[in-house]
Image (tube, rainbow, N blue to C red; front, side, top):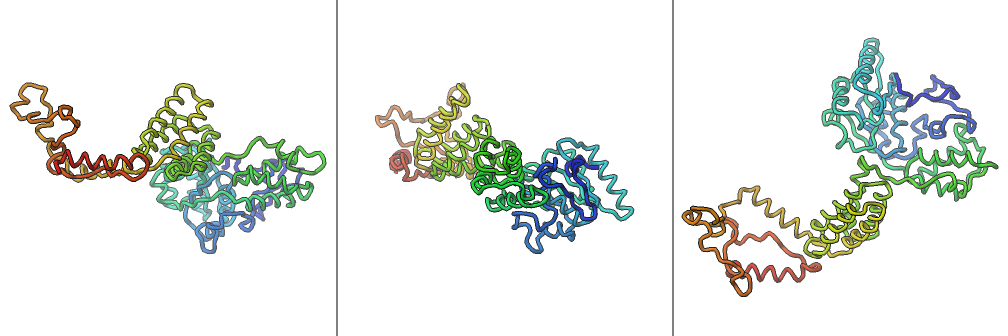
Length: 449
């Protein structure tokens, strides 16, 4: 009961005994990326951190593991391949569903089928592609079958399961993170495709410069690299694939970014941390990455506004002004013109002096509140604008600072429990270098020291 994820077109002849699919080289109508899908663990490229001797994933692929697993990683890193290999190795019946098209009805039908198979000693591997797209109800429908091992679930997701998979299902599964393939891994995949009988069987000559270019635009995605190679080969008139042919056949490089997924959070996190670390070039890289992927410019602007107070604060008070102005420009003129303004603000924030004094001050004050250090508002600071306030002592004895020539005078402002408590500690960075001594002077006057 598959949805075609592993079904091959009629041009392919399936060899059930070998547990793999055979193809007719370069003339096959089956996509190159499908033809070159590894048929054994030895053909898997990359992910060595998960495939070491005795590792949970190797045990699963070799047929000795029993835990359900969530394979989490970017596209083109081998999630579907590993699910197929697990099924082949265990000898279990294989059922595949896509979260894009399957619902609770389809999930329950597969589980019922798996239960019937168990009565005759057959076990089932249930592969769910894009499992993060399942609703909570659909994911909940899997829980009992996974817990009771009616099925061995293999879920594939490009999004962090911590954000996209319900906690009960998450706790019943082994979560394994796949990494983007390295340039060396992609090059190995491409060379195999050129020579292997399932691929081009040596029918094309691919120059080193062409390989370099495909590796560069692949972005760690094996499927994308094979698709680029195939598109280039199809355009070749003499059996040669050079860099000019690749450039003419492939539109642009892969942008490793997913607006709705984990890459979304990773890239924006790197963006903010680069600003905080004063690496203007890295910050601009991540900004360009987000803008190239079509990220909502309002989201970027909001992050800049937050960073201006969180990472810079009073070390450069103009940073917040620049960030707010950028957010307003985004609203007023939109993209693509606002790209320049976001770049302007990013450069300002990344090169500004840094201070964590603002969040530290807030954190210290909030900690006291959480510890119950609130206390009564001093009587002379209370509201005196209503009948009977004076009789209660409210606003009596309040000293108006503007009556003092310096505009500041000795007076108690915090509750009794917090007199003398310091929250704001200016740094020696930027403007705070000047603010620090002033803060100390003000505290001495106000506290009459």
